[in-house]
Image (cartoon, rainbow, N blue to C red; front, side, top):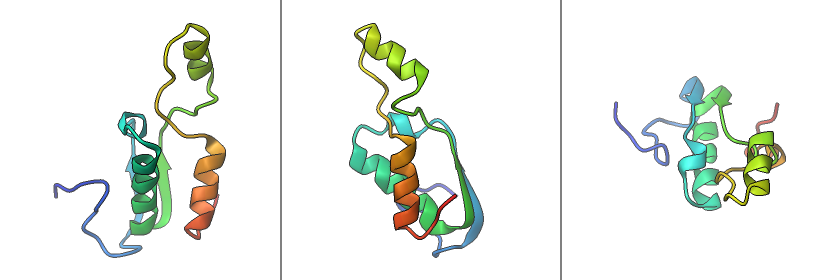
Length: 90
């Protein structure tokens, strides 16, 4: 199956879990990052495994100290709140 992560062609809770690796920080806006996470949560019955650069990670802090733009990302707390708002939490 080929599909967009924003519109996964599955019913709600259709699979036990989803995995998303090294994608989140490539999405240019916070709205798109949230939309992706919401869609993963929608199709997953039990879990979502996702890697992402935490805004407050050492790597992002070092980037800011060096005058570089931090990776486009979310904070752990933002993900937790998003999961809770979708009726999921862990």
